[in-house]
Length: 375
Image 1 (cartoon, helix red, strand yellow):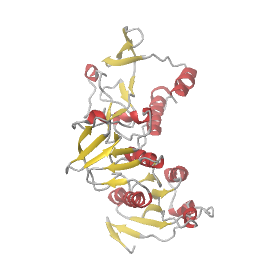
Image 2 (tube, rainbow, N blue to C red; image 1 turned 180 degrees about the horizontal axis):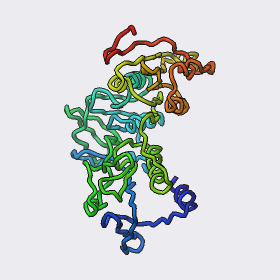
Image 3 (cartoon, helix red, strand yellow; image 1 turned 90 degrees about the vertical axis):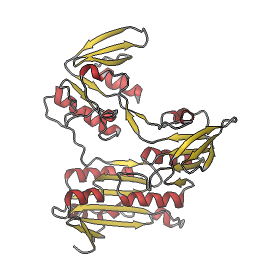
Image 4 (spheres, rainbow, N blue to C red; image 1 turned 30 degrees about the vertical axis):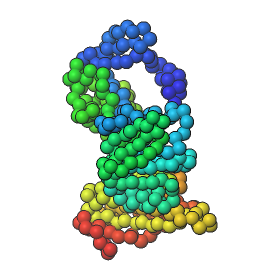
């Protein structure tokens, strides 16, 4: 991807690429340190964009230097036979699923009661059930390592807060990310930061009018396509004569676990808080591909509809290929499709996806923010 962006996208657009490190020297100037020659010069510009991204965060506990992150795991010389993954976000769950699929003995440790905070509760509970019942991953909730010990033979011992010990060959931390602001000299231009991130407005503008920021450094929505959208809209606004603020509503995303979780729009909890009155359609079933071999793998489909307008404001799917499925649904949801629009769409049979257009009766409702079995 780096090669494609640098040699095709940027080069063909006439962008000058400088192999160097940059730091702010003022609201309209960047100090450029050339890594090849060691020379430093200053470049001035009407507008400056900070898009340096984020970096994995690891807590300060004894032995943390023996652990890896989603950065280093791609450079391991050999596959660890036993690996502990620490964290409860999508990165932790995805790598736990990947390593389990490759045949490693995987233990997932998460300090909370249930992983994937911020996702729809039904999806979180469903994935927990599926991972515990249909994978070899040892899922340990309310577990937080307090020390990592490296033995003479190179193996590691994870000691949790209760003193329990677990021996393994690798420990991967996926406990969040921080903004990569070190060395940017943001103070030189008066750029405001919060923790390690740069707050911006809907036009990706910082508190300094000439300086903008997009992507993970802004702590808005840490997804690659979102960063591309933010940068594209900023370019259109600054150089295309358009008025294009960012739009983070109804952005689809996927957790690449087994099963996958595909989601777009509001969770049930968010929809209740925002709209008050909603109708919830939900169905759990075994997909045909899992029925013939009598697998106990289940799919979960869920639609959330605002009662007043009947607009579909949330779609959440846990099944094989959920990401591919929800990408198409996201177009309809973003366009404002109603439940009637879904109902008027003929399903493709036999597929799991047809469930999205065949659920006719709400499973339950919310009225005035209160859950009820009747409308």
